[in-house]
Length: 115
Image (cartoon, rainbow, N blue to C red):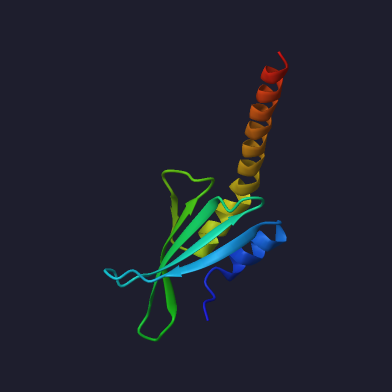
């Protein structure tokens, strides 16, 4: 059973985000990869968690890549607490910017069509 990012999942559910989980085992690296897509309407945000197992069998997170709205360069975190701190500060602010940008685009399209 995979319990990676349980606090992050609780945070996203509490704030009205939906998510989808995928597991991938690459052939050439010893790390396992867990892909986590989330968003309100579309699943366009992505977390890529690279983890391995300690000799005791416990999971160790090596790296967490966060890409909000299909960014080209991810933000990299090394623990779930760093990720949660970033999400609490930036995610809702980023969502507001994106919605304002989309509203502006739709307004320009409707204004252009009426002229």
